[in-house]
Image 1 (cartoon, rainbow, N blue to C red):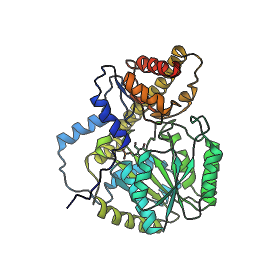
Image 2: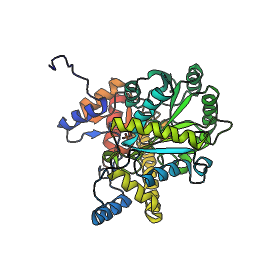
Image 3: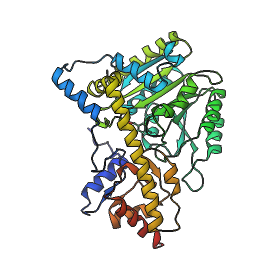
Length: 403
Ligand SMILES: Cc1ncc(COP(=O)(O)O)c(C=O)c1O
């Protein structure tokens, strides 16, 4: 009965990890996956998370279902973390948050909502983007349109092209923006460019989806949220938005699937209607979100001292990634003088578009066991003092021999 089923190609990122595992090279380095690794190459459990988990074990709250939209305390704290507790949207109750299984769950629910409730048929997405964006919105029934994001070298922003993309959209289309730490490139808009882009989105009456998977990885928790806070504040912007956030990265809770979809509107009545529709979509998709990760985040955010410790640890992660960026650029200048990797210093977040070509990426993998994505994307957070020199000398060997 199932003979007609054809093989689906493996996910590019997870496929490379499988290849990496099979590689017998003792020096191999995996810079493909999207997780933060510490100096020992482990995905660390944050101190605040450990404390809360110990407390949970002692208190044994049980495993009953959560409400369809998740833990109420979590939802409120998430909205406050994104918008700031004093933001007018929070004060005037013009938001609703639904706890979702990761940022992916939030994006899918957002796509379904726009398609079913707002009659949206098209979504504009940067090229390149996180590859799953394309699959998620296609699966939600939206037609994909892309706008070019990078300059000719492929390592910096082409802002004019981003604006052209938004200008080409039709009123009532959706547009997805990476709020900070663009994945896969690490290339972000500056404050002035954000104001201009948000104005164009408003003027065109587009539905914006802010993908916010890296809050705290750019310049800090508050600064990273600035484009969203400005936009939803209203005039001169239209103020209504969908915000998809994730705690996979900034809590290192990848496998616990913790995220949220926050919507804002001009009245609290509208928001309540939106919430009811979001819940109806959730009910038929996964019924209700997983409990454990959401409960951890809620307890950390609600406790002043745990929260302060989480913020300190997150600051440390951001600073360490920047120091890895600096160390990479400095070492490349030593081992291959004359090459310019300075864009890696300026790009932000876990990922960087290195500018290394697909052919060179292939040779790095085959000859040195250094794994990058075919696009040349490096997970900077996969570097450490132990492997940095090997990675840089391998890149220098491949780029330097003219092959
Ligand atoms: C840009 C972007 N959005 C969303 C996500 C989804 O995150 P999650 O693992 O929480 O589903 C990711 C994860 O890599 C991402 O890079």
